[in-house]
Image (cartoon, rainbow, N blue to C red; front, side):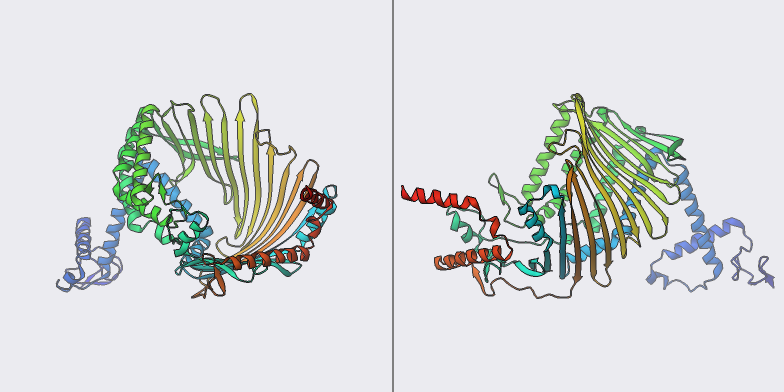
Length: 619
């Protein structure tokens, strides 16, 4: 009896692997690979053909051999890919990995909110928003009139309710203005494929509505020469109607990925290893990959891309289809210079624009070419990138620089930055847009952010100007689930480029927010307490707002119609018009009195106006 030398298990005479532990029983590596190869071939035979094969007894050794072969082959392929990447491959792979990392981060932090918003575009929903506030101005700014307005505003609250059904393309929206918790003014809006309606019960107790198929009649009431569409087509375009399908995404990735790979030649790329990158007292060892194209090379690639785009009829059809979806509402201009704005028009205009850009490239060479420098970590992700390009000829040649940072440092900290810089080669004028965010996630479910955004403009011979926004945020809880956020922010201005703003202008405030999104339970809740402080020229004031909102997804909704006890505005009679005008005027007067605003509409000047009227009538 044969025994396994590894585990002591019993072996059959013709066994090549131990059925207990899977160890090889002789025959060497060649036999193992042949066995694994045969097993892999068997795995690729269709199931119906496998049933026709002679029955074989499976055993553990064969499974382990297959796994070993896969690991060996896979390891060899991966090692060849990792250790033998060309600079070009490393550049493209790092950009791809950074994109995947960005999309994953967005999904981790905001995936539930995005999913809920998508559901709202497909399912019936009911939403409410309640807003209340408090206003306080410095005593130096106070006048009796301003004090009265401030008192009124402090008692005002707004309530908004919205029911909508995307599939039926119908909605009913109400807005109520309350004063000291009593309704002062309310507005209703009705919307469906068949009609639009408006109702202001405080002013008139019936809705005024327009049937969409009578839109032409309505327009001709004020313009007898109207020659536009007779039917107003209202469309709630669904996200599914405009987003790319999986097959379309695959087509675009394949076609333009191949184009990019073919056009970006290996000699455009260089690699430098062991680059020291210092950030906040730390030093990282990175690889630097540089894409460098001469002006002629960059112009050629851009021209070839435009030709590639113009020849891509399938992509043009994709865009034209979405253009038609987005412009279904014919309240927009349906013609341009006598041409109908349809899919064919869109494709023609797109190709015309491509030709115009190509013509410009003939006269405008890419000044300095295109240069893109990536600093890459050991995970093949971009830590810092900087791309520059410009135009050489033309009235206003501009150099464009785009740089980003995504630097991990310390204990679960990350610094992110986006910087767009535009320089005019002639005037030396410079426009800069910079946004950075310093993120600290050291403590579990407690995230801190320090965000800064700045827009600055400088021109030689003139003083530069800027606007700067800073915000510190403290998150408590998982961002993708129920969490609280406290934010402190400030907006400041400097320099004469931002005119009519006092040099000491300062806007600061705090936002305390609770956000709760539950996709499974079909609701989203948001509560915000906002405090604003404004100072300018030694004076200022404060505003406090409380905003609570909630949205629930429904299985079904009943949406009211405007024609229920309403008046069709295309059928309105002169008598009805007079009745509406009289009631509206009376109700406006009553509303002004109820709000205590009558003193704002009367005063010493009124007697002068009456005197002028009397004098005029006596002439």
